[in-house]
Amino acid sequence: MTQRIVHDVTIECIQGDIANQPDMDAVVNAANAQLRPGGGVAGAIHRAAGPGLDEACRPLAPIKPGQAVITGAHNLPNKYVIHCLGPVYGVDEPADELLANCYRQALQLAEHNGIESIAFPAISTGVFGYPLEAATRIALGVMAGEAQKLTKLKRIRCVLFQPSDLAVYNQVLDELNGTR
Ligand code: ADP
Image (cartoon, rainbow, N blue to C red; front, side, top):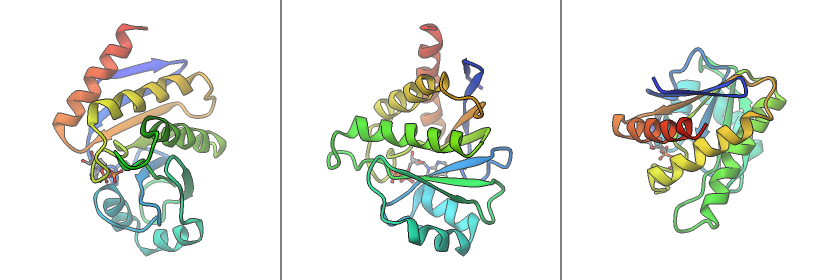
């Protein structure tokens, strides 16, 4: 597993299912604006969390691209779910800033809620069409940049569904390690 430690915060990348990360305090949902179940990450999270999560989300919707909101995790093996709406690539602009806002807001929400560990999927890289390598540079760049401001949050995990996506994350993380 490729890891980077920035200011006492471990950033790690693994292959897996975001809905099955029992050792993490919080998992991040690649949500839709209405915070409804849907497909991909949102489908997996809502299926595992059960209908209570859908109910908890209703009063918080709709959210805007770049925004993050927090709920309990219901039947998931975590304490919290942080729901982020990534940009739809080619539609929501500026896409890079909106995607960075997702990661930044999620990390800040985690910090404010005393969360020590959080797992992220590759937001916007599925149905929303964001090219993976560009999205990866934004995700890992924000994580490394925010790490110095984090005091409670100690562990950030990137969970990639596909091995080829994990390889891209590992390569970008290696590059960041090289510039340490
Ligand atoms: P978005 O609508 O933000 O693009 P998606 O859920 O369609 O979100 O996909 C985001 C990324 O998450 C894609 O790279 C997809 O392969 C991956 N993915 C899909 N299901 C899971 C899962 N259960 N765990 C982790 N990653 C997943």
